[in-house]
Length: 304
Ligand SMILES: [Zn+2]
Image 1 (tube, rainbow, N blue to C red):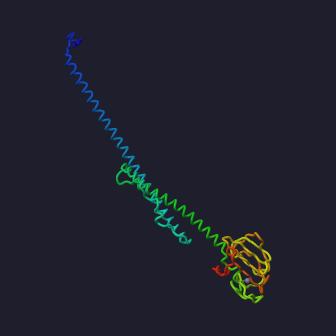
Image 2 (image 1 turned 45 degrees about the horizontal axis):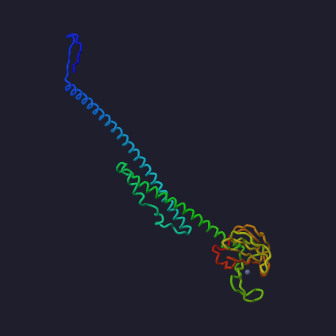
Image 3 (image 1 turned 90 degrees about the vertical axis):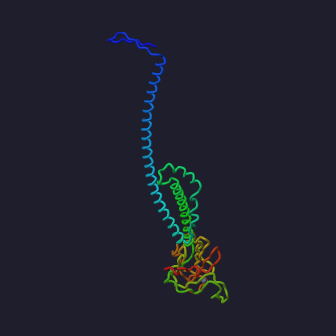
């Protein structure tokens, strides 16, 4: 191959290459350019890689710091739930309920599904908080909170029932202390003061003075208020949980059928009506329609 070119000094000149020489020259130039390009690309790739590593490192530090804070929050929650559990035990003990078995409290903690989560731990820097541990803790806290919610509902039902039972149980004498003379007759067989024959006495007789207030022995509703053969002017209260009380021989009734009364309300005045030999309250306690000994219920003595 020949090249012709014009030179200012020498005029027209001729340059000739063999085909082979030309090919080798071209190859060398191509290799040089390729080499240069590769070198530059390596540099660029390396710089980008470094920058990316730097970003990942920073991301990792942020994740680690965030996990550390989460762990702190979770630990604080665990402490609060622990307090709640202790209070739960205390309330249950105080209310006379069984405390929750520790085996039941431990239910739902741990398990194979957490093993899978360990596989993500390699993503975190060594020595940092572990995602799986945190997940196990959070899940266990969730279970404990749910258990506590259920437990508090149970305690509430139990206490409400006990409160209603206590409110319904005729546990106090139906007279103020100063208005109560003595028990003139008890529950059981006795000699009838009118006929002199042996007869069952279904209540207790509380000696008092005419006109003194007769008090409701528990919360309830007036079932009967009127004249009752043998009992004179009488009141029957229905208390719930199967309890009823009867107050006989009153001089005056202060309630009517259907009235709601609370423990300690005055329902009538002491008298001597019906089969009675002096001012007193004939007081009966019935459980599911059957008379029981009222003195079994006088836990606290007369009302003050
Ligand atoms: Zn009596």
